[in-house]
Length: 267
Image (cartoon, rainbow, N blue to C red; front, side, top):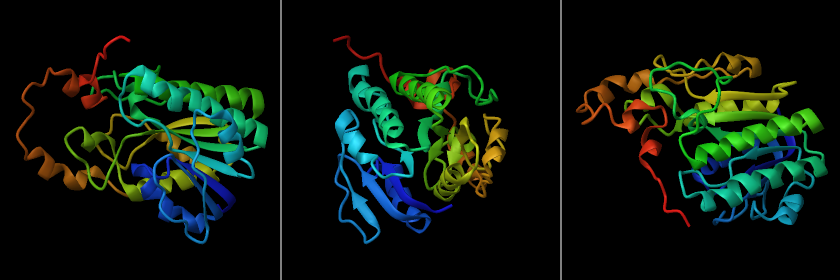
């Protein structure tokens, strides 16, 4: 797969910085957007800062774009009024701009927090009902449903990636089930961009972890073959002291520490 012009939103964020240098060989022009500092542009890059909540800015941002990697927005649990502009209004602006500009493929960085209130150890499929663990998870569930609407009504294809813990190595016991290596993230994104006739597909973003909580057989539909595994880190992680309270919601549910955030003060 090689796009003429590929847009990466959230390019200054944690995963955006991981993907930015890896995408250059897969497109002629890489358009990068964020409100945070993007640094200098390489020869093949275009820098276009844009506020996701600004509909006109989003329309300009998607002009001439072949496909979108949407990694922008709030990436942690926050009060609803902080999640709303970028993650709900912003994703609507993105899809409406895609419709108006004729963009046909979006890879949407969703989150495992869409199903964070399932119990740890419970194996679920992407088709299981959403059980968000907070406002962030709610916003990602909204984005997945908006993707469904824009496919059914307008034919815009989306692969929604319910990303696990994407990091150089798994951080803890929870990470043994949901870890996604940086190299596998790249493989997953490229498969999502290049697969044909994806329609509106949701899959979990994880490496080849034997203790996974997700039945991710749908990944084969797009040709994603993870090559890394959290098993290599299991011994060192399980050698750490056990958790203090195994009945703590952060230890019981798949959303982990997000279950310990909030409630927030009502305005």
